[in-house]
Image (cartoon, rainbow, N blue to C red; front, side, top):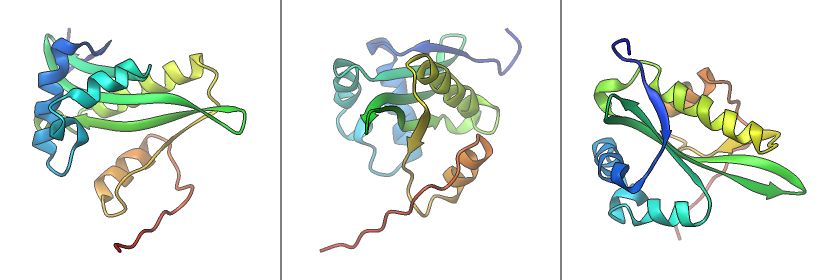
Length: 143
């Protein structure tokens, strides 16, 4: 394997500690980190897909996605994609998104959606570069 090359594999519970570490490194209020990985097992129990990017045996990124039936149409939904800080900007995130797209196409999805924090310019730029376009703007107000 050439340096920096990744292999995408289905996540298994043995990968969860590395995924949690990536989430903690990313900061913020990660459901995965806050639940000590229980959210990952629950996702698998619900039939969602979790995949990891591996460099050798090291988990360097991950993605969580599923298929939702919306108005009679299968629509893919990406819940989370994250890459370890030292492996960012090397194609790992793109490889994970492409993997999800391939799986979702096989499941007859016609499109894929995701939601990101409105102030996360890095995520907006990343997803725009992978072919996503702004579809709607959700706004909220604290009560």
